[in-house]
Amino acid sequence: MAFDDLYQEIILDHYRNPQNFGEVTHGCTIVEEDNPVCGDQIKLMVVVDDQGVLQEIKFKGSGCAISMASASMMTEEVKGKSIQEIKTICQDIIGAMRGEKDPEVLDNYGDLVALKGVIQFPARVKCATLAWHALEDAIREEEKKRQSG
Ligand code: FES
Image (cartoon, rainbow, N blue to C red; front, side, top):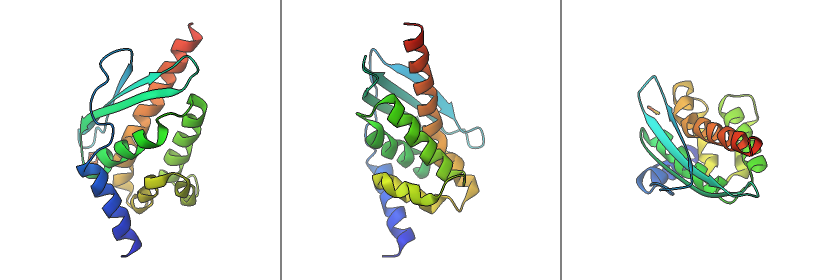
């Protein structure tokens, strides 16, 4: 199997069987993000505990295979991680997608390696980063809550 086929396989798999798809009903921070170019959107719900660890994350939305698969892979990667760790992961993924970081950094993040296949298509980079911008917003909200006590 060619490398690109493998990436496509991973993306389609997450698109068909999205992980952590659904809703958290209470005690969560909710953010929404959309891609103005296509109108696709994502709603992200996160629960961070007193130690700053992401205990729960779910998403809903409608969008292309890449945006939904990226969201699914993201939730798997960041669940159980601390806010600090998640910030680093966001920087790595978004940086790699924008060509600001070596794409090899994606090798550290499980299925997210499949996003390597997207970097060469600038129009699709926005699809891949949609969920990640939502996550950055959610983390920002959480930090604000913490600062205000
Ligand atoms: Fe809309 Fe991909 S085409 S997010």
